[in-house]
Image (cartoon, rainbow, N blue to C red; front, side, top):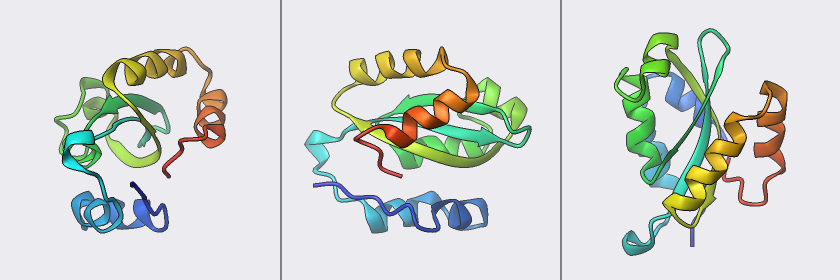
Length: 119
């Protein structure tokens, strides 16, 4: 079973605490059934970036250090907004494609209304 507490996630991560302590304290995932995530983050220029990963902690740390993607490296990681858990990489990639076709406000609405919203 998996749970993530949204409470103070961005406040803790935007400061000096690593995402690992937040995620490790709040997620229980069997190693062999690790889910994929579709996530949306905000950059300092207020643009949004949508991506997929099977290791949310590692991916957010990569974005924060400038090694996650060229786009986020150029625009600079500000905070993670939302993440949705999906069953596999194929489902994650398809959802990512759909989200990337949406307008800014529709992207945020999509995440907020999704039944598998984790935070």
